[in-house]
Image 1 (tube, helix red, strand yellow):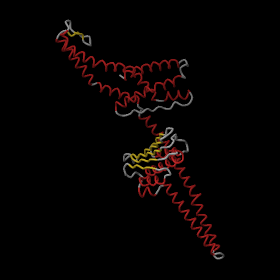
Image 2 (cartoon, one colour):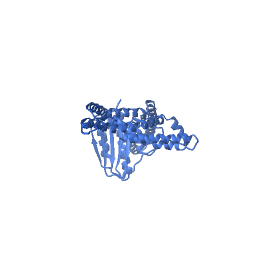
Image 3 (spheres, one colour):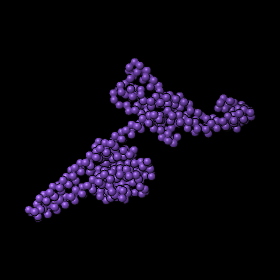
Length: 393
């Protein structure tokens, strides 16, 4: 029944597109073409959802974005194969959708009528008319009517197979072809690779800056202080001793800074005790009271655990700075081939991914490992950051 309605809508859409195309021949319909295509896409989205539900697998859509001026949009419409496939489905579904829906309704009714007519014809003096124009007025015609009823019933039983066939045709026309999917995947990987390289470069610059401004400067100070102590050793032994102690304190501070830099590259607790212990340590140091829920203790690849650790650290930092939250919760779980991280706070909400922000950094870390980040942060809260990181080889 729904297919009959969408078939009728498809027929109207084809007629409307034909009118717009005809008007475009004289120039007045050209500006309306992109808008007409946008208007019919919800109908096609509905058909994808219906067919995907029938087949048990969602049908994705892959349109090239209609951006730019009218000339660029028209060029995109002409070059995008998805639009031609959509038009083919609209024509096909507009032609057969309504008749198939009518048969779906008519066949069971006809089967019941044929069988009842075969059973009750003798109660009418002049016989009974059957659904196919046959008048049942004798036992031979009654048998024929019953056989037709059984045939109609068999067709009704086979109607799910027809629905599956219709859904497969929809998938063949409305799903993106392999070349389009491969092109989209290559574009996605190119983007994530560029983001990963940018993030890696930024991380190297941060490490270089931390070493230059911190540990390197302190080690240089130690060298100068020891040199002064050497010069003062004979003239003022007391001042030389004080200078040596100062150099020792400076060296200790330099060592602490070096350890901080090492932890920022790859925390030793990750390799020593695993992600669960490292996250628990992060939660213990969090300024906001934090609850950690661990679902499973399977060790993940080193790169995945490191990414998850820094994602959680960045999320805690963001919540501390911006959320005004009173509590935080961290959940680690997922299948063996997929690590899921969820960080939830009860703050004011309204978080958004902005260039250069902490959430953008979380997204880059996830995409660098072919993962993804989703953000839910309505005004008033709560805020939920969910990160999925594949663990396959």
